[in-house]
Amino acid sequence: MSQYLVGDLAAEFLARCGIEAAFGVISVHNVPILDGIAQQRKLRFVMARGEMGAAHMADGYARAGGRLGALITSTGPGAANAASGLLEAGFAGSPVLHITGQTPTRSIGRGQGAVHDVADQLGMLKSLSKAAYRVNSPQEALGVLTRAAVDALSPRMGPVSVEIPFDIQRTAIARPAAFDRFVLPLPPRRVPQGEELDRLIEHVAKARRPMLWLGNGARHAGAAAARLLELGFGMVNSQAAQGIVSGDHPMNLGALNGSRHIRADPVVEALFDSCDLLLVAGSRLRVNETRDGQSRLPKNLVHIDLDPAANGRTYESELFVCGDSAATLDLLAQRLGDRLKIDPGFRRDVAAAKVEATADFTATLGPYAEFPTRLRAAMPRDAVWVRDVTLHNGAWGNKVFPIHGPHDGIYPIGLGIGQGLPLGIGAAVAANAAGRKVVMMAGDGGFAMNMTELWTAVQEKLDIVILVMNDGGYGVIKHIQDSLYEGRRHYGDLLSPDFGQLAQLAGMPFWKVRATRELGEMVGRAVAAKGPAMVEVDMSGIGEFPPYVVPAR
Image (cartoon, rainbow, N blue to C red; front, side):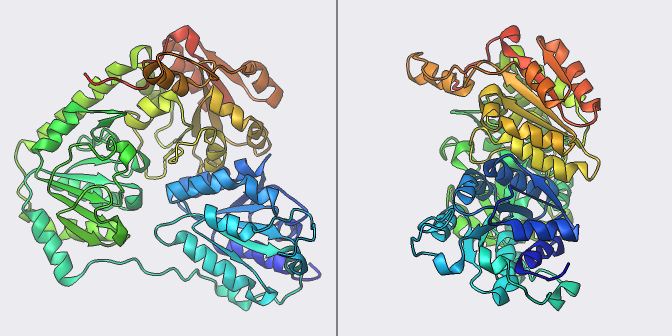
């Protein structure tokens, strides 16, 4: 390397942050950064077919790997194409560092017609990201990138964008000596102490039938949560928090948290009625999981969250504690010890409620009632389960599919359609490095939106099973039209490709499921295959999926 440029600095910075793979599309305005990545050979660059896909891949990589994700785009249209991925990373609290180019500094904001110039790219990025910065000189590049990475990784985590003008990327600079001992200066997370902690202990110690509700902000709290379950707590979690405690733990109801679309789960709400404490950690109690805040939760609600604004955001709490979920729950488990006097029948009641609620929910799936158990049996226990927004995910994929690890369940939190395939590709880059498979489920409608990213999976030789649930269009929309618009179905039928021919064109093995009994065998074959593989489920051969919007009983 004849000269060390700011582009080289940006490339090395990503590697020094522990990032092993970055995602993006090469362009005239990011060549210096990608040239640095190629020459340094310290991280992998995954060439997406579009910036939208690349952004979701960086998000999927961050979630599956539990680390910072990296996205590199071009200026203007390239950065704008990444919008949906940045928004979804924000919904998910996923730490993604987005580095984009910018027109040369002499042209910024002057309307001179420079290539890819937009009137206010930084303003656009600020509206899409947790924060957005511009590097205004070569000397500040390391400081700005460090600030951005710290912001992305600090609670509440999210995407942060950095503009580096093209002329600055090409400027020669001395390699920072700090890289030889570089550590991101992440701030410590708040942990309650003294009287604040004592008050929490005293309040919780009075409970006889306590439930724990974990959210995405408690993803690192699995060990502490498991100890609380050993002490006698029952547990539910938000859909995004599946796997913090394994889904097969008898005291963990998982995402059977009281809400089934627009109606209550009577079994779970009856259990809640019998509880004298709900301990919420790292969860917003999102309105789409609590029937717009109408779910009947225990009145004695204690809330732990690092964000002080979470206090009372959805449900009023008897006690709010501002602190890190893992550290606070760990202290709680240590201090409670034998002070907690659990109702002798509570464990039995929680375990029975789990069995009954699972059976009750599964019975609503009609001809697809066996899909969760057949698919789970065909997948490795440590497989990463990625889903797009589909009828199947909105039903059993989110509710009764057991997930066993805190980074093993990924889906679009913002409920944007079409994001599943690139999320799965990013997850596979992280998971395959640890010898783990990814299974990604999408509907035919959502799959079409990022179909070209199939070739990214093939080029990268990823171990990913692509499961396409084919009902000939937008099934979710059709069910909503049936329930709320007197069955007037418009604009929901799509002409899809022959998926077998598509898989052949992409050079991947393909299987087609025409009956429920075939699902496990076909998926098992796909899992056993090396590299990407596709399985299509022909829903017309299995039967109509039960109504998405279920009227109250």
